[in-house]
Amino acid sequence: AIVADATVISENMFLAAAEALSDEVTDEDIAEGAIYPRLPTIRNVSAKIAERVADTACREGVAQASYPEGYAQVIRDYMYDPSYST
Image 1 (cartoon, helix red, strand yellow):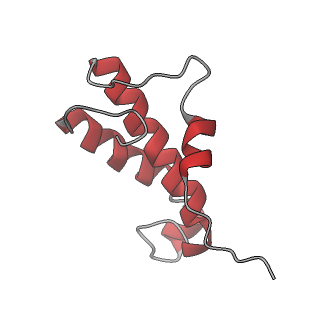
Image 2 (cartoon, one colour):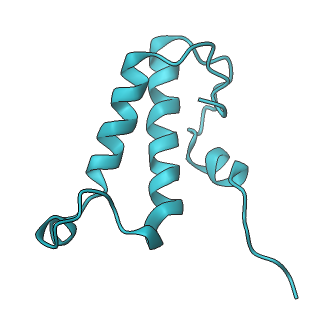
């Protein structure tokens, strides 16, 4: 929603986020009793959720920023990197 500069957060955007999250839960995760993706995949999962939400905002006409090449790389570039150089 931030990258798309959405004017509102719609119910469909919440639904898109929930669906994107559930898509990232593997059969292995479910077999082990997990209902969320594994923590080591959090950055990738977060990017996929953000992309799905931004795409939904664009389709609904509430995105003020659009990128012809799509949101994926813009979202990755926007993400905070917690690593430190030594």
